Length: 309
Ligand code: SF4
Image 1: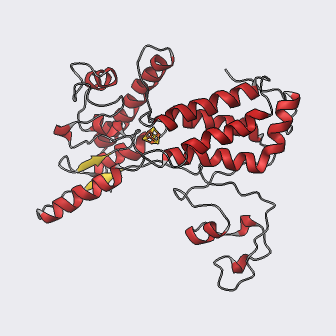
Image 2: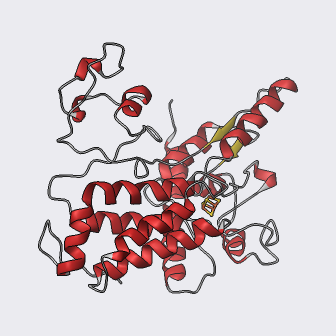
């Protein structure tokens, strides 16, 4: 696709604009100046602004949380953007949506609806409706990367697939790292492909620190609609912080399992399960590291005492 210098500059200018604006928004949210929550697209600007360039203004956007730059490219102004975060009178949907749920009818930019993945069937429905109306509208759905919610595989695990009919038979006796990514191959290993991504941790990574990062992520990303997810992710985050700060008890490890057991299967979207599974998997594989940290107040892997704010 040939792009003129003016088009390239226009795209680049929008990328810079959303990055600068969201950087400020994030700082204000951290300082408590913006209520609710914010999600930013920093580092992902090109993905959706490039798509906005390629689409016609009449085509449809079904974003996740990090694609509002596409709306800016179509003419969404920064003032209503900010007003949406406050849900005030100048918010395009007058406060009837949660923060970061930008919904701009005149730009064919449809709000995400919080529960994970719901924008996908919405986009499919729009495309189907266009087909029935014999229109050539395009509906684009965005969804994020993943890989943190799936059960963990350890490099030293050996593939056990003596049955020739097993999808992993070709790798029987080899390391699980030799098995190619695939729905069936990974299911047979006792994990999942998830969103077709894998998170790889290097030898020497402290699992307690990695676990803390994950819990912060799930706490931050919970939209809060379901009580088990809203409260459970916060609770799990507080428990791991307590452990990191040297105030944990051995019973906290089982408490983590108990808390996520009350999230799993009790929420309206898959995020709740996604928050529960890494807790179960980390404790299954690294319980001794958790126990060591509680007993000694420092990491079994690095020997360092960690602290969480
Ligand atoms: S499971 Fe969590 S992220 Fe999903 S809708 Fe409920 S509160 Fe929101």
